[in-house]
Length: 290
Image (cartoon, rainbow, N blue to C red; front, side):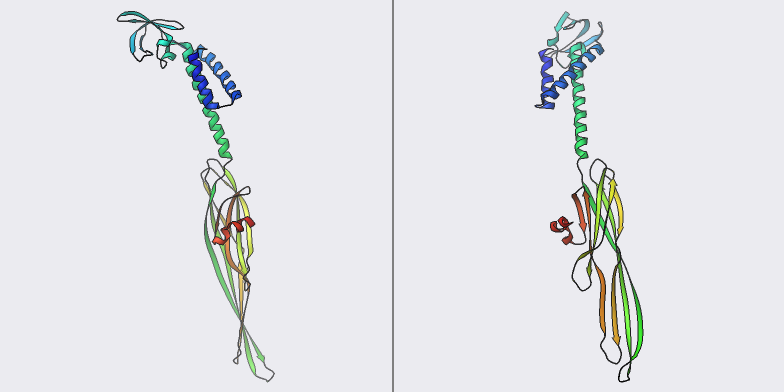
């Protein structure tokens, strides 16, 4: 192989493979195979055709192609027959006239295509290992209440009659969440969606998990999926008892009050995004405790 043809190949191998000699040797063999294939496909210009040559020094020459050998071009010009050696012709046009230069140029193109495909395959593999998702949550509470009254006539030890009125009011709340899961990558992915509803038992100030759940959510690349979730009912019962004849009444409450929600988007054990009704539930300590 000519040194002038070998140098661009070596440079290309160094660029695309760096310090990986085994891979460079593999590409060198591939290059040599392509050269042999393209040599057989080369078709030289026919003698008698008018040609325009750019010389190595930058000048141009026109004439009629008279003879073409493996290393020389003979052209009939206005001043007579002129022969140009291969290296006297500019490298940008040698592939038109010489089989080896044609095969060299085409083989380099094949190597570049091969390397580009390798890079694309590698990028796809890398992207397949990346996971990026987001959440948008819209919350809506459905509330209702119900009241019942019961009256009971009683008589004191002294014989005085009085009435005990018991009013029971039941408050019910269901928390609904509309959750939009977004896939921000260029490949389909499946996420783990988790949700938590919190409650505070009446009169305690404590906080506990009232309801929770989860599901797997597949999402196409750069797409969104909407999921809907509803909590179990929160029920608070308030019982008011009043006595006639000037006696003071009493009020008793029981049940669990709504205390907020948290939605978490994961891939494996990695939290990609989280949304909550309170910043407390988004703290690192709280999320780590999950």
